[in-house]
Image (cartoon, rainbow, N blue to C red):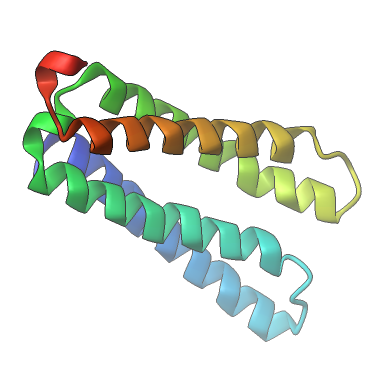
Length: 125
């Protein structure tokens, strides 16, 4: 696995390791108040990024498109903003990061949808 699939899979593994550590911390402290942020990290970071990695690995032409690179950038920035944004929202210190991260995450999925619909055709990038 190289290139875009590798980057997505590496970030998926990093996400689940952080998510599992966070889950253990919540269990030990018996404070599960941040579970929505933890769940988003695990679902978007681990599950979503792993699915993206497998798709781009199975359809290598798709990974070479400009839209795939835009997808990657939006997905990473979206995740980096949405998780602390949800923490901030839960702590009632603002919702701006959560909103921005949500929009970027949706935009990244729209890009991925375009990649899938095009079937990985590099000429349609």
